[in-house]
Length: 75
Image (tube, rainbow, N blue to C red):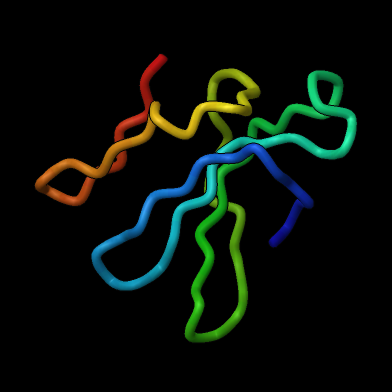
C-alpha cells in the first residue's frame, strides 16, 4: 500500500479489487489517515485515489457497498 495503516476499513469491489480507507499508523490518534487506496490483488499493487473529508480510523462497520457498486462511508 502507499501508506502503512491499521485499524482501517476495506470494501471489496465488483472487479476483485479492494478499496482501503483511512486507518492509522503506529501513533493511533496522532497518525490517522485521510487517504483512500485501491489495492489490486492480481498485480499486488495499490493506487492512491482520493482523500476523505476527515482522517478516520477504527470504523469497520461504517463502510458498505451499495447494490450499484458505490462504496458508502458513514459516520
